[in-house]
Image (cartoon, rainbow, N blue to C red):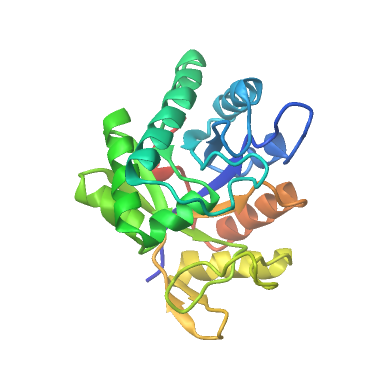
Length: 258
């Protein structure tokens, strides 16, 4: 089924202190939603403040990007946490970013977990339910973003939340719809043309080729642009142009503005 519109989101605000990452200001020209790090895997108060302000200036919807507490591992290392710990971590980080959005004259629009927390919640019903509960308790109007077809959006929908099913332009997929683990050498699609082509296939035909070479049906509401790519700005620009040329309207989830 061909989609007439889709959201482009980017993980950003991932600098920390003197350590700089990403091309956030340039990427914001081409995306419609920003998932902003909340200090656990990356980001700090000044970075959060600056990134929120930049998103507001570009009219981009603001989302919290909560993570496991793992600065050294960039939030990509699996940790053994309880459902209540996942709930508290998520609520804490949503609260932090929500205040920055409010101070900038805006509001929080969505929540998308990061890295290992995202993948753990895609597979585990208990963690998914805890994260969804934290989002609802923080603000029932927030949109919960999770891996397309996984346990996380299912948990959000069960609690009455608006949910968004997410796909990735530059990640390989397994036959079950999960992302190929980053430990595999071909987990990330580095070639811009190949990543743009995958995103177009998802947006226009709801399909993606798996690592095994089979076609997987994948219905997505939003496509992720990873902000930690060295060519993130070029990639975002190319992808936005390709979607525009294909007649796919790019807009924030729910048609909302920041």
